[in-house]
Image (tube, rainbow, N blue to C red; front, top):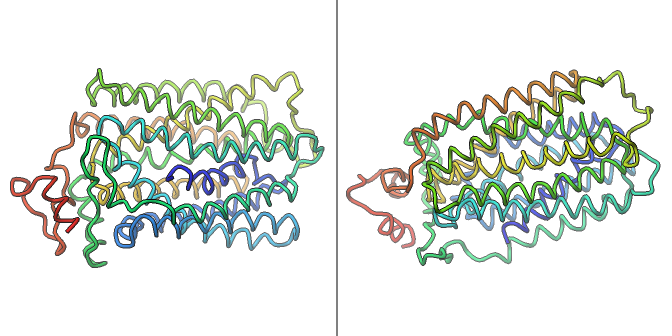
Length: 448
């Protein structure tokens, strides 16, 4: 159910963005709307863990899904009224707040529901279902625009997306209460308490203070949406016509499904210790980062913003150069899914408590969105393609290098009660000593 919430919302949003410029010829409006999305996203997500723990995950998800329908509707309005760019940017700002709520609730549940031996599989399954939304959206766009000679998406595409995102708003109402969930090994999911807002905000600080090594994942968080700008706008949106962009988007998200399941299975290999799996996952990401960006460099060096004006011909799927270019885009999709899945898995390896994981997910989406806002703005003001490309490559490598000592120092074969400060925190904000409480007792206290 959680996967299908994101199937209908963020999945279709990604399909729209994957067309380059939101499927429109004017990529500047799209880039500026993404700046608005990620700027408000960054602020809202930082505190969204406290909001999620106070309101509960289902209500938080419900509030979060509404922004996606509004955003898709704004692109339909722009297609009908070309002078309504301000509405798109405003809708993007509202979406950012909603997305901060949705992704924080999602991250908390996705990392807390599985047992320690299944976290990679659960993240992979979620990421696969979520990206099916992008696959469906891209398929709709490809079908509607396959014979189009234009470089922009028609109204029918946006209407289809709008109907699907509106359906997605209803799904959280059908989900089971997380307090009733039982893991496959028979243990109950530790559910967040509902103390005062003051204590809930204090819990955010406690999560950071008692587990400071999460800071070493912040560069990895920062890089995790940075690459979309070059991939979507500066590669797919620049080089290809609408038919090529639609097909590229389709195979990109199919690759994401494969990539997320592949890395998830590797990270859950029971024959290996969890620490060993963490280092193997890191090595796969490091290798994929260089494969993709060395390959992409040989294409990026051949074109600039001045090379491609709005009226210049774009590459079609029947062109001789197209197969090699689309294979690069497939590998971009594989890297994206592996990066996101591994990042969630690393956070999940640090805790099993949904209250703490909600804060971690909030940190993740906040830092991620701050980076995305910056790079989308750089694209909107016309920074050279090569600058954006090289910054993407550098940040991905830096994120992995910072994460390496965190894996060495923090990832253990099992999570213990000493690592769960929020599990041991009472409604007054006092943290009980580890020798005075165990996880099941803490869980029972929270349930009562």
